[in-house]
Image (cartoon, rainbow, N blue to C red; front, side):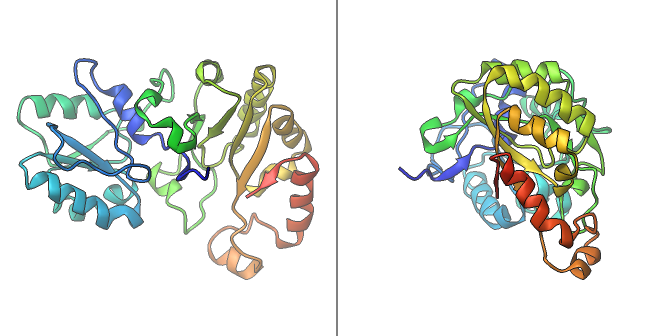
Length: 283
């Protein structure tokens, strides 16, 4: 059976983990199931990228017509918070970890603020494990999704990642990542990092620690990974079977124009061969 979507996203499952236990949480992923607009709820949260914005605003409108307040976050709302605010009751700008508890408390007290923005990026230590139990796992190829890093060390002009994460690249403690991976059922997972090998020293430690777990995994990485034979070998030995790699263009001039000249066109063929020689699929 062809699944509706490859893997689940972590935004809402992470927010669910951050929500006080006395509050009942339900996640609806419209990729795999319809929204019940008549559902008995007190607060609705929506998230999305630019392409999702029109639908997110439609969803917000339907619930607000019933008098139910709506909170929106994610990349689009962060880029255009004033636009988003025209359609929702509150906008979360940037990461939600440091503001979600306060937002929930404000909602309980009937004083929801129009905007919430953390004063600093959240710590990558002691993050709660996402509530994967709230997902319809049979609708995805896998719900085993883990984040080890946030951001990317590169500054490609077209990419929203560096903007959203403030040009930072932050790593979770390897011990905590390994503990989360151990809890997952099955032998396959997706690291949803934008560039899992952005810090080579960290990546080598992570891959080394993953090896004994005998898992298969997929993720994203820049082509610079292929310039470190030891790192590539460790990735393969730790269970890497697929990497999403941003090639972007076969024109050196185009790559330079978008600030991605660290991709060297004359090295593409050799780089792809190196990945394939380790039995890793290139997406």
